[in-house]
Every structure is written in structure tokens, then in C-alpha cells.
Length: 374
Image (cartoon, rainbow, N blue to C red; front, side, top):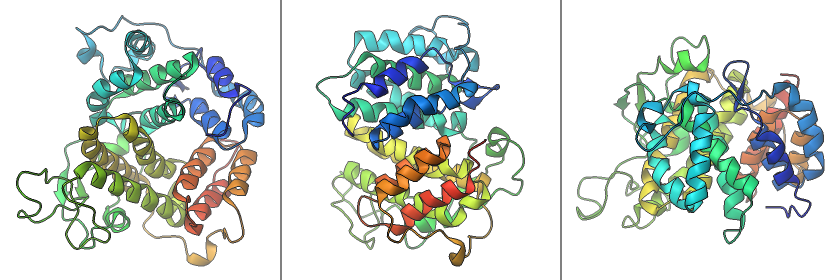
């Protein structure tokens, strides 16, 4: 992370923690995520001006409904009336235990509801964890509080997808081909909650190996097919899950460049949700990496199914990233100002750690398509 010697991020988070996680009924408060990305990419000087412009989208934290405890948390899971109670619960949990321990307990509880809140809660958790991982030896109260707010938002909006049939996955086993094989729902009208309720089936991905490989003593649910390129040692399913998740983030980011026009704002989340999961992996026990990959695939495929257009954008209409540096691309996103453009660009720069013109083109495409006045 860019050194934040000014304390800008902590100041911004403290400023935001009096606000609720949503506005206008259920639209997500993106400010904590956006300001973290701005600071990380050297745009800290713009943060407070950005917040000044965003303040009309901030609403006060809702009133408490009822205290959440170890005895009643199950009945409170997925209850939006508890939008204030859940952050308070996690504040207490994080005051008494290391944040990684709290995360390890709650991540598998929350993971089935990854699509809740249009995937914004898991994305917010990803940004929060990234700040805590920057300097594992020390942290700050605002950053720990941000994790409490993020986990609390996820718990309140926890919403599992409907039961889904498994369709055959692509023969290639690639994430890009798997996303291409996701069938759009027939009715792409209404809000995301109505759309997600229409899902019926997904392609199987990642591919599973033949039954005789790897040995029966090794987990087999998420190892790569024997003919997949650069296949790692099948004896380490956690590393395979991380490799596949990295592949999924790259594929979803590239796909935004060619298909983002179907819904420029909502299709951002097909890439940013799995990237949030990828950012959290280093803080989790390795046995949680494979189920995290499964959930990330479900989230990305779900957003793709309910918002993707039937046809890609013609190649001659794609923005060119030739000669543009990643720093220049993020500066454009910061100047554009829209929170979705900033977050997609943040993910695109993760993908573009090596030369990756299509990832940078996806970021430029977001800036071109998304109306900053929204």
C-alpha cells in the first residue's frame, strides 16, 4: 500500500463510521471501499474532496433493533433490520479477540450468502482486510472498526442464491470459457434481488479431475484437470484454489472490457467480488481457500447471468490502453470520480501486475461508460 503517513485513510474511515452501510432503502455505501482504493493508489490528497461530493449519498446509521449474541445470531443472519446491531456485535468480538480469529470463525458462516447486498458486503470486507494485512504487526482502531462494519453489513444482508443445477463446464477448463458458458437469465428486468431469484443453473467450474487422480487420500473437489496448463501439484488444493481464483479475477476483468456495456455499473461486481475473496485468502486458514473459490465463482457467475449482454462489444469499439501506464489509468478513474469506476480500476490494476492491456482497457471502458453523476 502507498504509505499513508498523513493518516488520510484512518481519518476518512472515522468520518464514515457514523454513516450506515446503505442509502435510499438498500443502495450500498461505497465510500469506505473507494477511499481505501484512492489512498492505496497514491490519490490520498483527493480523498476528502471525494467524500465531500459523496456526502449526499450518506445516511446515518439506522437505529438498533435488538442486541445480537452468541445465542441468537443465527436468527439475526440476513435480517436487514439488524444493520446497526451486527456492526456492534463485531465491534465487541474484535475487541476481545485477534481479527484473524474472528474472521476465521465468521468467513465460512457468511460465505454462502456472498451474493447478498449485490456482493457489496464481501467487497467491503476485502478492502478492510487488505488494509489490515498491509502491516500485520500493527493496526489502527479505524481499520479494525471498518472490518466490524463490513462483516456486519454482510451478516445483515446475507442471502444465499437459490438452489442451482450443475451444467457441464467448458472442455478447456478455463475461467474465461466458463464465464462465456454462463447462460443469461431470460428475464433481465428489475433489481438484482429479483434477477438472482430467477437463476436455475451454472456451468461446473473449476473442473474436477478423473476419479483416479489425485490419490484418494487427497481432497479431490477442487484440483485442476490433468491437461490444464501450468497445473500445480494436486497435493496442494489450497494453492490450486488460489491459482484458479486469480484466473477467475483476470477472466472477469477481461470480460468487462468486452461485455461491460450490458450493465456498466452492475457488471463491475463480476470482477470485484471474486477479487475481494482473493484479497482475503492470505488472512484465512488454508482449508477455507477451496470453499472460498466456489463461492467466488458463484458470485461472479450470478452477476454475469443476470446482467451480461448477449453479444460482446466489437473489437474496434474497445478503448485502447496502448502507451498508458497503470498509474495514469487510476488517475483517470480518480478524476472521473464514480465509485464503481474507481473499484473496477483498482481490481484491473491488481490483474495488470504484468503487462495486461486488456485489463487496463477494462478500466478505461468503465470510465467511459459509467455516468459519474449517478
